[in-house]
Length: 183
Image (cartoon, rainbow, N blue to C red; front, side):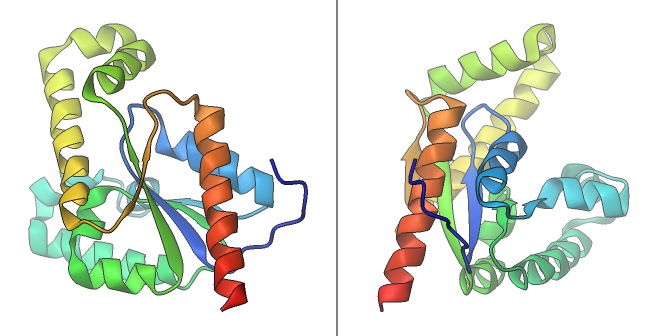
């Protein structure tokens, strides 16, 4: 880890899925640079009292998209924050463009067998429930759609610990910030 102080201007968006908690990862990264940690899914649940999927089912896609656009516009105003973001909003070209004006995006990936192993270790007996496992697989398929966009910075976390993933993300952020300053 680089001991030099690091005060980023642009945000770091962590997306993708590797079978671990994105929120724990962004908290770990944010703590290392004293930055705010924001989680889009958690913020929606706090504000709307429903998960992103429950919002879609209850109010429909148009309402959910409007809420996502508004919240992403709010997140885009942040500076130097670490943001956990599911794939769905980033698949929308308008939302993605707005967020990436002042953010770096790092997409997590993992081999499917390792991802399922991590999910099983993290959720134990719940993972044996077919409906829970089906929900995880649906979530994985949604997150994998990001890769179809191309030209994304993807980190394969298959052989990495959560600490190594956090260190890589911080190095990625620092490198991009320094490169931006040299331009």
